[in-house]
Amino acid sequence: MAKSLNRAPQMTLWKEGLAAAETLPLSRPQTAGINCGNYNKILVNVIPTGGANPTVTMLVWSDKANAFIQLIPASTFAGPGADTPFSFVFEAQGRILYPAVTTLGAGAVAIEAALHDIDHDLG
Image 1 (cartoon, rainbow, N blue to C red):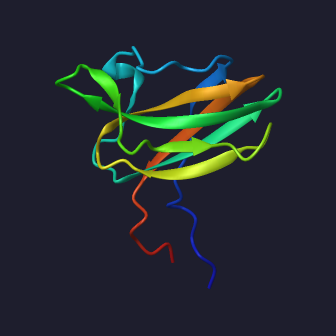
Image 2: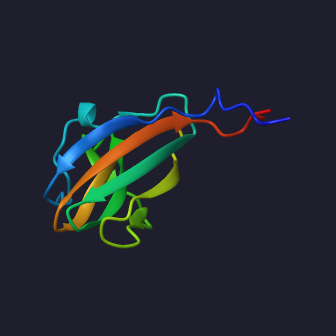
């Protein structure tokens, strides 16, 4: 019997047309992030265009610092080549996250994201 896809995560366009790399430390309000609430995982699709070969660094919100902060070791995901879309899964652990595009080169990038817990049978 075929697997059911009715519980597959629905990707949402989170960022589009970003044409310049974001410099760390990042100065963004908490509301700029993705609230992962009760979810353990975030799925991120990175779609570069115009020759872009982005690197994405995941940041987490800190109430004490009132800022998005870097993880140690850094959770950085590099593109496989110019104009080549890529995807990764990150342990959200219910936190507020910000996928920062820390290198870009040429072109622009779009980011899609979905929250999901991949711990159930799809059948």
